[in-house]
Structure formats: structure tokens, C-alpha cells
Image 1 (cartoon, helix red, strand yellow):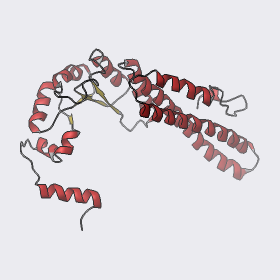
Image 2 (cartoon, helix red, strand yellow):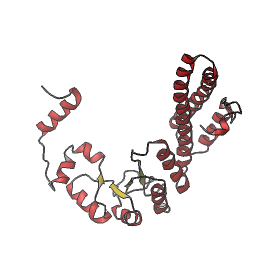
Image 3 (cartoon, rainbow, N blue to C red):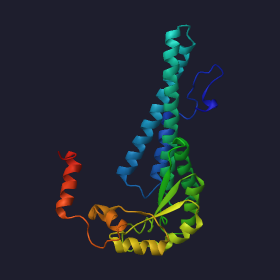
Image 4 (cartoon, rainbow, N blue to C red):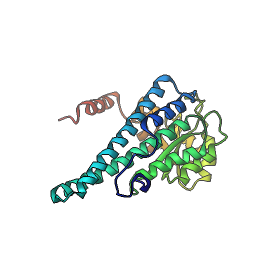
Length: 260
């Protein structure tokens, strides 16, 4: 919790914008983002509203607990300090959630490397240092003008690696994926770059590696369509390695747990 959130007596005060003011301002921001549909806009508003309400409640509880700790009762002080520590951490977590909600909403406006940096940095700060943080991006929103800037922003913010889907947001999932556009990103960054997009079989994987220069791949829809695709790639097989019966047994184990 920042020092400006406490008064001279160490009692926490919610002295920033009121909950109503924050919700109003965030609602206006969401209205300005034309790419958001009503359902997503309402969802973001609810997340934001819950987060700042929880934060204000935790500040109020924290204030009461500080007073409790100041009481002469040893038993109360011990319990109060423990709970106060927990609540302070919860307040910091809510601060991060609010910041992330604001940044993600701003990021919906398009390519803003500064916002990308702040978003990844906020996660890096919030997550314990021993846990790696990664990010995934596309080549851009409507175009590729900020492709390298966004990749550098992710690296500079402390990500351990970045996965790049080889299409813009505007491209959606329409083939082809532009694997060759990943090579400049891989060559520009010091962190590992993982290629993603339109990898449906072993031949696609080999071609993607050839064009992108990336050794590592992320596979999404291809692995759903062909569950043994990762094995096929690892073993350089153009044919399925598992029979339908083998796949069926894996599905049963997934649904019901290991077979006896």
C-alpha cells in the first residue's frame, strides 16, 4: 500500500477518487471504445466495479484492525496484525486488478506500445519473481506498423518469452498465417520468440520453423483437431501416431480419470 494512503496516525484513508467517480470515469472510457460489444463492455464494468468496491472495503477493515492492534489486548494485537497483513496484501492485489482493467480497456483501442509495456510490467510486478511471466501478441491490430515496437515493449517489461500469432487482429483466423513476419521479431529480441498460427500438421510445423526462424511453436486449434499433433511434430511424422481407439481411451481418461 502506498504511503499516501495513510494519515499521520497510520490509519488508512480512502482519499483517492470515490467509488462512484471511478466507475463513472471507467464507464465513459468503455463507451469510447467502438470495438467493444455491449456484453464485453458490461463484463469489464462489473469486474472494475467489484474490484474497487472490494478495495474500499478492505481499507475500511484495515483501519479498524489498525485500531485493534493499538489496543492493549495482546491477543487482539496478535490476531489483528495477522489479519491486517492479509488485508494490506488484498488491497495491493485489487490495485493491480484495477490497473490491469484500465490498461486492457485502453489496449482495445489499438496498437499502443506504451500500454503494452505497462500491462506486462504490471503483471511482472504483481507475480513473485521466481515465476516467469510471458505474453502473447499478434502482428498488430489493423496493420503491422507497431509490430516490433510492441514486441520490444513486452521484452522491456520483463517477459521471459513472447508468443506471436502470425496475423493481425483484423486478419482474424483467415488463412494464411504470415510466418515470415515473425523472423524480424525473433532477430530483434533477446528473449525467446514462439511461433503460433495455422499449424495443422507436421508439414506446417516444419514450414513455420523455416520461414520464422523460431524453434518453439504454440499450437492451439491444430492440437484440438489432431490430439497427437505435438507427438507427430516431435517424431517428424506426417501420419497420425495414435489410432481412433487410442484417442478414445484418452478422452475417457480425461473425463473420468485413469482407468482401473
